[in-house]
Length: 189
Image (cartoon, rainbow, N blue to C red; front, side, top):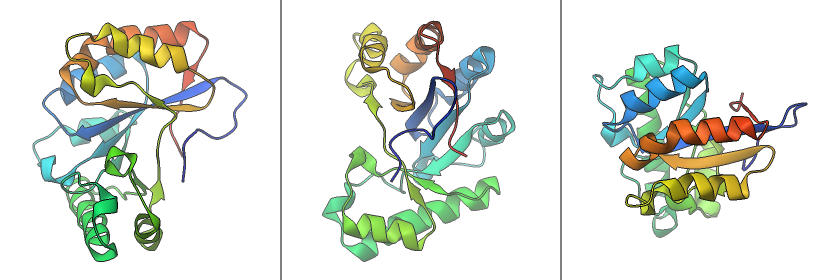
């Protein structure tokens, strides 16, 4: 289970985006490219169509992990259902992108022993986060996303964001603010 980045000489953080691929993905990728920042995306495979800009995401150095097929609370499912959610999602993402999927983020951050066992059997590393931006609740107050993140900022943090309009709106400001605090952006290897 990963909740922070590995040791580094630099102060580092990682941006991670859940619940895509969404219609704002191209805008998010434009911002990340402009700011020269890598990110990890945890996708629901039901939203991944060959037409989504997954090739661009990979070409620009970002990583894709699974966030299941349909985003259920994993703890409400038995082992077989959890395994199916992960295995099918991985198969879909890999068949479309041609990239091996090695990371998994449980929806809502909810997991149990069955989740860990299924992930292990599928060769998936579970990735959580240290900082939740609460962006999903802040459509009418996007600046609070920046404030929430900066207030909790610390070395080696994984930051939870989502592919939402309000997140894309504040992303340049968030990245610039994090850089001003002396942090560099890294990915899990």
